[in-house]
Image 1 (cartoon, chains in turn cyan, purple):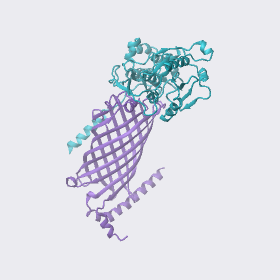
Image 2 (tube, rainbow over the protein chains, first blue to last red):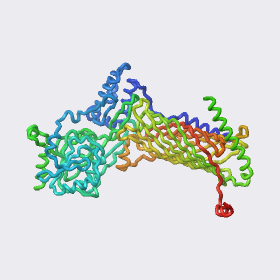
Image 3 (cartoon, each protein chain N blue to C red):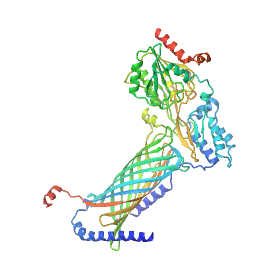
Image 4 (cartoon, rainbow over the protein chains, first blue to last red):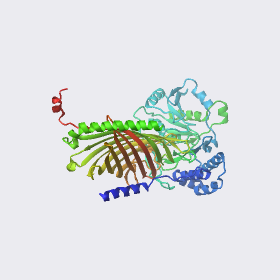
Length: 340
Length: 288
């Protein structure tokens, strides 16, 4: 009996002496700086890839920005320094959120031509376009279907897609415009893509980090696109892209370009192939960062965007005439395909 | 304030005393002729307390706040080992609303826990008995972080076999029967669901990558403990039970560190009843 009691007491001591905690940082400028640097160091998924691509050295970044941290600095100064440090990652999925501002890296589209004008798009849509959940669509004059999906955050149902494809069934080709679509739910993107394949196809791979080391990754897990059991499109398709096609839209473009009847036209996409996670700092600021990379079927990274099959930029002359060069090119392309 | 306290204590004393009277008159003569294994103790307690949550899949920061808990327990002696073994079934559910230290984020958590097990009774003397045994336990719950993006929530699902020990001490103050009980359960082997370090639920459930999400657990990666301390006070119509639950759940699986430390004050009632077999035969003899 005594032995049993001793055993219980020993077990209790063992339990109380083995608390599972996370590393704690002080809520001061240095503590918040170290906490942010460590979150990225242990959890950000592109440190190795970006070291290869453009020489990112996260330890060197620590040394450089550590010099700017002083205990007397204001919240705004600290936010500015931390925001600049995060910019080194060149990732639109990395944001630092405070009560007064959001640190961001938007060069992936701000440094490039817009290649989209909503006022010109309005000319094409007119007033008689249809809306199926988040998708605007209509049949253009030359019997080409046009659909605009502005955000993959807008949910679509199979019923919406059935109604839309029934309406567009008479068209000789289809333009899917996802310019300025900065992402949303991957499930919405794959639900739409499933209408364009008749067989299960490999579209890429996903990995996740398995530990805090820069190279601690799981084996790539294949991602397949399975055909929808509802109405499926069997004619040529053009997907229009620009630099503002980002995140889940980047993934949609990667999926669609694997399909034989699909052509990507426009500008390179913005990228953003890491599934973002969130964390936070001792002072309560929230941090979003890429946590889980997605690759194409050849296991190439898609973080910095996908090239179109045909590069087309909007021209000043066309814009002055109220014409969208990329839509016009796509219409000609589909008409030509129809003749073939 | 003191006056009210004395009045309340006086009321508890009076009701307890009357209950004790009733006990001695109506029960003592009957108990001897009844089989011990047909006694069932059932209690339901409600509690409120303080909890501290950490789940590094969601945040490296601790969240603290208020927790509400309900605990339903059923104990019964069996005929096993000459009637020295009892069964215990315990169902707990708790929900908590917590906040981080900087008051900028919230987490809502909930867990349902069901234990079932056997204890062997060592009757040390008339007052004290020590129980040791094992429990099987099933746990299911969640933690939801209100501001995260693709990692907004963490599912909790794990089963364990736990070592359990209990001490029951019966005593009287001015002839009123009280009972104090302490129980501790320590899981020593189990299986736990956990996403991998940075694996999204999208990858697990939508894409179907289940590799490494079911993990073996033991004291090295799940040093947890649940303890219960209760005091039974007889009142006129029932038995009042007040108690403390210390629920310390910890794990370090797939490099994800988690803990939930809950300290909860509980109050409720105990109901003792006797299972009547062959009820139909007895029913015929009952005149009303």
